[in-house]
Amino acid sequence: MESSKQIIIGLDAADYELTKKFMDSGKMPRLAAVRKSGNFSRLKSVIPPNTAPGWTSITTGMNPGKHGIFYFYDFAQIPLKIVNATNSSTPRIWDYIKAVGGRSVMVNVPVTYPVGEVSGSIVAGIPPWYLDERSVFPKGLQSKLECANYEIDAPLSRALEKRPEELVNRLMETERRRVKLFFELADEEKYMRFGMIVLTALDRLQHKLVGKGVAEDDAICRAYSEIDSLVGEILDKFSGANILVVSDHGFNFTPIAFYPNSWLYGKGLLRRRSSFGYRLTKFLHDLFDGHFLWVPKSATKRFQGATTVVRSIDAIDIEKSRAFVPGTDGVVFVKSKQDVDLVAAGLSELRDEDGQKICNVYGRDKVFTGDKVSSAPELLIVPRDDVNIRSDPFSEKFVTSSGVFPKGNHGPNGIFFATGPDVSTSKEMQLSLEDVAPTSLVLLGIKPDSNMDGRVVEEILAKSAGGALSSASVQLQDRAFKFSRSEEELVMDNLRRLGYT
Image (tube, rainbow, N blue to C red; front, side, top):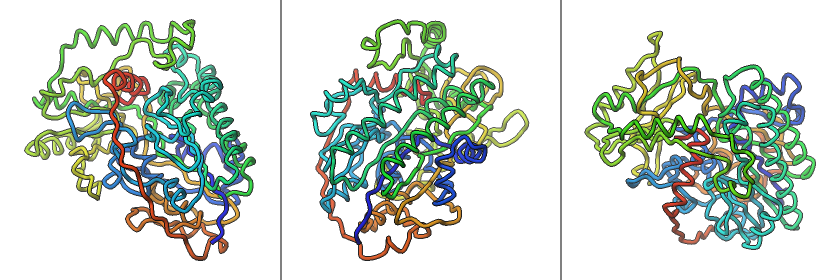
């Protein structure tokens, strides 16, 4: 079939309920127009609803048990290592396009570093948060990005959190540069069939501001509105293309904190390091973070504005612990199968101050399928929607609504929009992240791989999208890469800065 150009606009952490609310109130008119003439549905995330496995499932059509990315960490080894693009050998959408002779442009898609050769151009997303020669293809793009002051992420700080309007300004400055770059690269690719850009401001902002107050809520509303305007610019730029707008997960208000590592410590399954250094560093971080904004950006860009960084995972003696929770999205690392049932049952039985159940806990075989399941964490915590998993092992309470902790975290419900010449209007559907890639490929006239877990969302396909599909024989390069020790530490620091550890 003769296919139209296609663009995927990724909005990291765009929440289904908030997007619907802001469209209904007139704050997001461009996406509201897409909903009216195209499609809008809830897009269910993976477990856990985390950026790394989420975007990988979106671009591969497979669950983490097949593509092998379960979190920002590689759980197949101790000490834990940061994942990168070579941890997965699963073809992405643009690999299929390359196989049929098409060209693509990708900007800021997570877990694409180090980038490989593509037919077109690519600028990697997180991790890492810095830009180097492995972030781009073709290699000449690096100097172009540096001259344009391109940032993979805007530097954030405690001081900016206290000035929410300035925080929105800072994040949107980065997003506008990102869209400008995407347009320039698309213009240079005269025969581009596929483009993808991921905007991350909503995720960064919600991590910092959800649940704090009226001024913060107003800033979140403004950010959704300004992101909607940027989406509108992309829609206008590619007015004749099929366009999908998707998010990797949603975002929940979570006023209850859950400290599974404290429970594991109480059961003798987790070993803590000395609390003195941890608490001192945390105190200094709270005192000084963000108060050195006068320092030239050139001196702090690799650290993205972080001054002192406290990582809860550093307070855990990983080598001596039998089980631990390394982040805030609910993955549980259990070293011995003999402990799995004990941990699962114990965490499942915990209750909040009102006696209500906090979470469900699932074994990896209940969540994932595929040949990479053995590399997954043994257990997955799925918290109640109002519960925030925290990794601090020093909390005196396992579950509490008091104290200072972020009041928002990832939720399971993202967004899906579709519009374009080959898209028809449909009713709202229940979709999953894995459905995006096969649907995208069919709209591009390419036959999806039979190994994909997602389905083709046929309800949105117009008659013009019918016809014979081209078969793509994808050949991927064998690649291997590991971050250096200093790079690992830098990426870990930024994971903490965003609230992942």
